[in-house]
Image 1 (cartoon, rainbow, N blue to C red):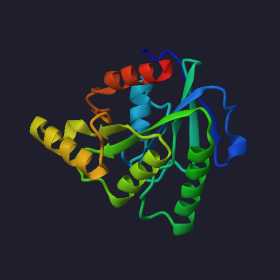
Image 2: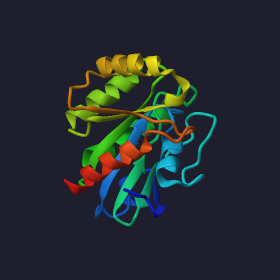
Image 3: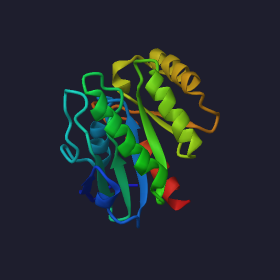
Length: 195
């Protein structure tokens, strides 16, 4: 798949602001600052389609991006950001739950995990939640340029074990900086959209 067209279609905090549920959606979920916006920019080959920030907790809305006029990538708010107030993070949780539990055309949620660290308690909870709703099976390991080849293999195995991934669940190491791994992810998107 080659992404030739990508546009921000909607920014939502509640279901009435979602675009019409008429295209297949692939959502991105992950901790604050894990690299969701950087990955989106890498996939679409656009430098600033999604706003990238050095400070975590920037995405506080559900952002819908229409891709090639044929499907959507949905960027969910980051979770696990300690400096955000409890009521604010609780609001993000409820906002994400409404989306994840009720969106008919949502195909899969790509969970992003920083390859350098063991998954947090929230990462594990998120994966179990996705599994419960049948939205699991694809984990992108971000910041792959920050580890050696040996660490990459070791950390991938550790993350797979921590999340309880099965043999059919995919992990794809990606580096937005080195521009690697995204082509494999686009191939997976291709086959998901054909199903």
